[in-house]
Amino acid sequence: MATRVLIQTADFDVGVEIDALRAQDLRVGAVCSFVGTVRDTRALTGQAQDEVQAMELEHYPGMTEKSIEAMIDEAHKRFDFYAARVVHRVGRLLPADQIVLVAVTSAHRGESFKACEFLMDYLKTQAPFWKKEQTPEGAHWVDARVSDDAALARWGIQSTNA
Amino acid sequence: MKVQIRYFASLRETLGMPGETLETSSEDVAALRAELMAKGGAYAQALSSGRAVRVAVNQVMAAGDTRLSDHCEVGFFPPVTGG
Image (tube, each protein chain N blue to C red):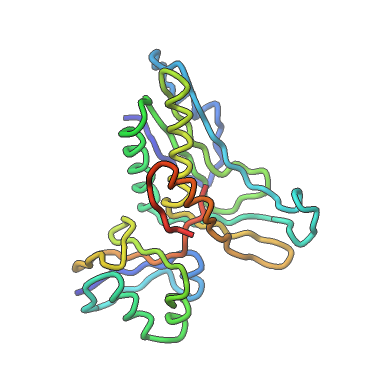
């Protein structure tokens, strides 16, 4: 089976990852992907103190990979798709950098759209990653969001992460 | 029994270490957390009941009543914020 989960410090090329995922599979008629990027909150609020100068991403080596593998297994039980790949970066990232890629292939668009969203919702509250933002006022750990638990609840999975 | 404990993110910073090996008679996650909190100081701060702490046993998300076993790995960490 092709590699499904990659945790790495290096950046990724979405085109290369999607090509690897499709892997000449002629059954594929739909590819859905999501890319999460580092946002500079100052660009939203205009407030100097909101500037995100850098982000440090920590993870739990071993558990992170296992938990995402389990998520993909769970997605296969729920949706009719062919393959999924999750690439998540760790270490120091800068505004506009790519953080995460979730890509899914299927015969028709509906199943890959759903599986992609399910995997991201699951990852946000169940995969052991932690973000620390560097701002002009110092570094702080990002708080978990109740809205992310609510997003997972839509799929019938109760989470009490936040 | 002996357990390998690992701390991550803000818990690792508060405790000033990435983990430790502990000889314990705690039988489940809740008892182990209480045992560590009872040490006071940074432990009481990092693991206080008012703080959201998640726990994994052998790298699988666990609950308070998840049983511990000899040489198991227990991870303590704050709510996750990846993606």
